[in-house]
Image (cartoon, rainbow, N blue to C red):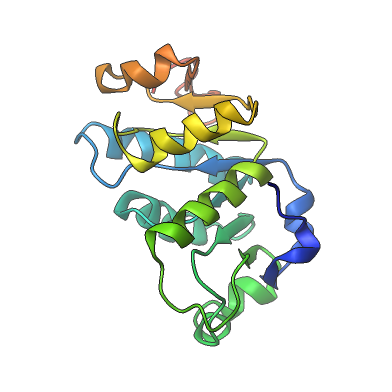
Length: 192
């Protein structure tokens, strides 16, 4: 069941929720070929100032978050699998004050630890808010595939982009489209 924006907690620029949003998910373990191609995707998002929404939980998601933070106009929505802690305002003050970073969570501040249950709820929130998905790699038996199964049962059919690599065959067979560069970085049409 979707959570209305007025029902979750926010820290930062809530108007970012009005932008078109790409949910970024990646399994915790991924083939070596995924990382450099995902950086190219992130470069393009940053160059175009497109809003990226994620839990930024896996190692690759965290690396992309740190990279996106370097873009002076990059809109980012960070969905937490726990409550908003006081240190976030101190740690990300400049980005929050600049209006380009929003933390969201359905959890109270006393929920201080991410569990499998809270991560699942967070991921459902991300999926609900997203207009499309970029999933550079998904483990065939992992939590993200389970999330896609849940979304399919709920008849949520949002576009999914992925990297065109053999390890993503299961995702491509589910209807995901291969990501192709728009050419903004001089890589027009390059399958990623």
